[in-house]
Image (cartoon, rainbow, N blue to C red; front, side):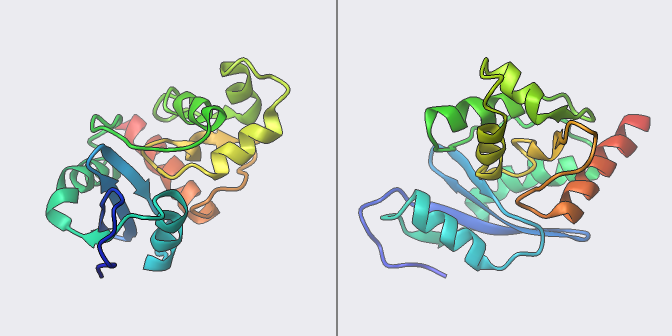
Length: 177
């Protein structure tokens, strides 16, 4: 699906399909920009792109997305714990601080919302941290699935609690190997 060419930065996309995993992935020339929720339609990607890249065409291009898809598949196979490719996430300075803190959570570990708030030196901003985490466009690669409630419970996740549970279980299984 290609939208009419405009003056904006092109957003390239493809569908990642690996075993029971299926999600839309998008990148710009600057890097990975979006990893979608498990089994969601193209509309999820289109709505995100319209908001973050309003004047940009959406161009399906699996070849351009191949390096990103390969790293995501390696993660899902349990052979990759960190991502090395560039990212292009765009948000407020606060959101960027939160998303960068998420990238510091070690593989197989979980932090609380309070931990993230403390990490960015905003200990009283726990609710705002939760909102910023909910706006994270890069599921898996910016590991918001590793954030849990203060009481240890699984809390909201843009990809859904089923996806969050699968990712946490995947990481725990791979730590045992």
